[in-house]
Amino acid sequence: MDSSRRAAVIVNPTKFNDVGAVRGRVERVCERRGWEAPLWLETTAEDPGVGQTKEALGAGVDVVCPLGGDGTVRTVGSELAGTGVAMGLLPGGTGNLLARNLDLPVDSLEAALEAALSGEDTPIDTCLVELIRPTSAQLAERLQDDTDPARNVDFDDAVDDRDDEDVREQHRFLVMAGLGFDAEVMASVPEKLKARMGWLAYLVAGLRHLKGPQFTIDLRIDGADPLHRRVRSVMVGNVGKLQGGMELLPDAVADDGTVDAVLLSPEGIVGWAATIAQLTTRRMIGHKRVDHLQGKEVRVLSDKPVELEIDGDPLGSALALRVQIDPGSLLVRLPRTSRAVLRRPS
Image (cartoon, rainbow, N blue to C red; front, side):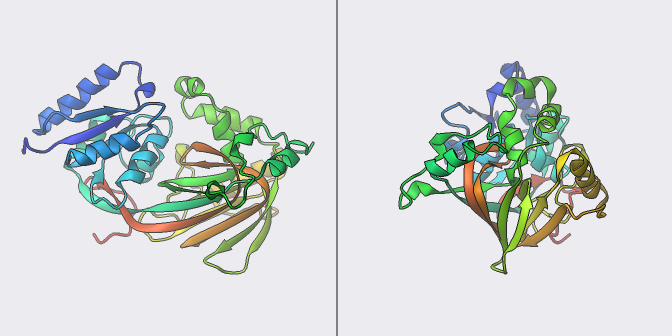
């Protein structure tokens, strides 16, 4: 045991009824392992983890552990990328999607913390996304479309001066980004409902959005000729397992140096049933409603503003996005006996 080692825990306090009790559990595991009491940093509405991660890095901790939802993990992981300081994943939200994809514990805080304190620093990829915002006129045109409910349109997303640097935004994500259906669902689920129902809240919201409108995209992989499709959703990801074990991106591996994409093109309830069957069985049933693609860069251009989310965080409306892989940019603590499917040397 080495009492000079210290972890930082960056916690989203809104995810817990008794933050003090959670802190006590974390401190007991650290003490049992012979580590110093952890640096305990809580996120706020104004700062969801950026400043806290910088403080942890400045303190020279050995591992930084986000304890919150997928958004907290993304924020902390984005700041840690390229620093050489590892992230330890602790379960605290409804998804815990990165942890699920890396076969880390999601049902036990103590087991997850044990892995974070005693595991092996393992490099995984992250994804850089650049999005282009719409104009006010484009958002207004969407609102006037009777076939498109446009429930989440926010004119604050608009940038009318196309020379303004705010037209383009850059973000980093760890799991996946989505245009269309999934982003609409994420934006429509209240935090209180998520706290009460967990991931089932997304299922309930998803059922309400099944009949939403399609949109037309041109998609390019690694600069190849564009693929023209009418879709309901575009998902681009670094890993592809969702809650319940569904493999949305079955070929996605966290350290393979590629980004994966899936295009979903269902029409109506029957189309969604066939789409889910295709995702589950990887066999085409009737019309092709699922396209899987892979490369180092994915560019998507939509014919109208569409909702966008990254790692479950709604980002409002976008017209286009470019996703690039950043290979091996983030260290994650995995147990030395990890069963995670990675392509690192054994």
